[in-house]
Image (cartoon, rainbow, N blue to C red):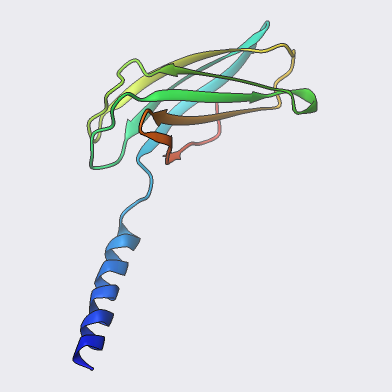
Length: 124
């Protein structure tokens, strides 16, 4: 019985700690997705909201056009390494073979992580 109570107490403490920490590591402060002839220009600012440094960061974008046609590209951030609380600008051009843009999608990665959990607002 004593072991059971210790186990329940441990699970409760771990559960409260897990509930308080955010799974997100990055927050996009602002960004825009502007179409131009044969492409899209994406610009913005991202902040490291985790308690660990993030290295070799890249911005990735997927542009969706009419008929679900897609175009993608990626580029390194201007400051590829972000300490906790630091922000960096990003800029990315995506070439497209369609004239109108239905949606722009944005995410971040580095060589060790396929996709870094990021809070991304709608583009302005």
